[in-house]
View: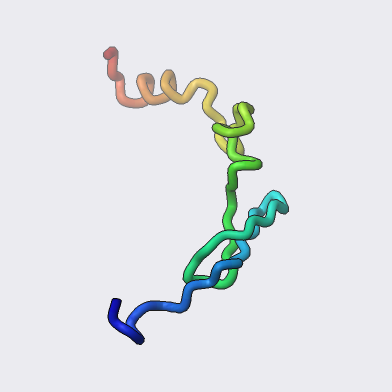
Length: 70
């Protein structure tokens, strides 16, 4: 490896999630903030969440709007 061209590597970098979870990892950044982690992601928790999305009738609305009879 060439000397002086690589970023500093932090063995104890801190990752903070919006849910409050804090993880210690190795990274080139000392600290980071993320919106979703393995403690709160629906895939890992097994819950089904739809935040701010109204999905009821969207397909029917599309078909009616464009007159598409797929």
